[in-house]
Length: 334
Image (cartoon, rainbow, N blue to C red; front, side, top):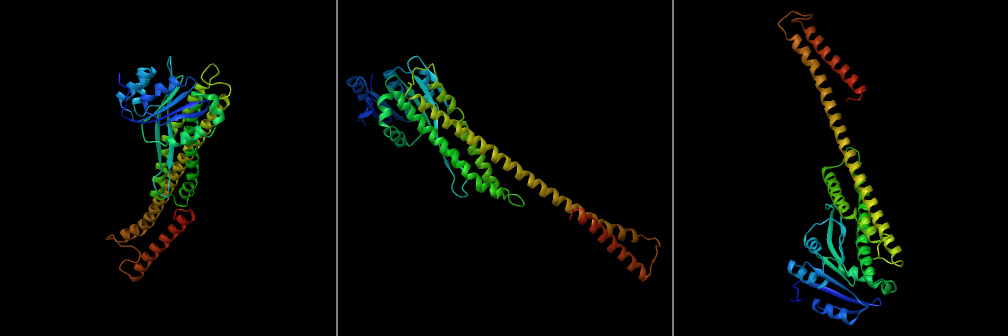
């Protein structure tokens, strides 16, 4: 069986917490693991094909269902246990909000196979792998005793940090939107559309963030032999950050929904006020219309065919119209 794969790869070999080899091809991975019995490896595949993953699956004994999930797009965040490995699917996220540009949430789906001696990550989109590498390199002491568990912790930490950062950016973006939406007379249409875009971005973020707490908790559960006592507090810290990110997103989602509802109510109030004013003016206009219609009949009336009759009708129109105007103005309808 050929060991060649066509997709872009990144590789690292860790021994004692130090990087002893990196940048080698997939075909050399098995040899490096054999030459360093205590080492663990990281293999990253960027948009691999089914044939590429078939080669990796044959080398590491990956379950066909896990491989199928790694090839599928838009899988929900989850952790599945198989006899010889774990399968993890998570989303790193970013929030784009500049000026009046419609806010957008960007997601990078990452699948990972956690075996005894290797962490195999599958990037289904272009992602910032440098952040992951920098996170691993920032704590050499913890890496020395963590092995694959430490690599998985670093992946979770980077993903949850991106989610928490996006949640904070959303919360900060809410303030100017709130000020503009609560202005007198309701928000302009552009501001309302901006609010709807923000709510759509929050809903997308929530789908990516909501399951993360359970995913980390599943790895860190007491009966799991994957995480040792040294790493357990670090996983709990990631779990706490995931919970805080979800709470922030849910708070922002509730906040923007209430703002949009308040704006809708304000628009309804304005419409009702306008309708009331139109009805009031229609009532004022109806009075002289009725009077002129009455005095326009071919019947004798006080002042019929007399100049003072015209003066009387005109005076009645003015007085009754002014009285009705004063009455409606006093009630606040005008």
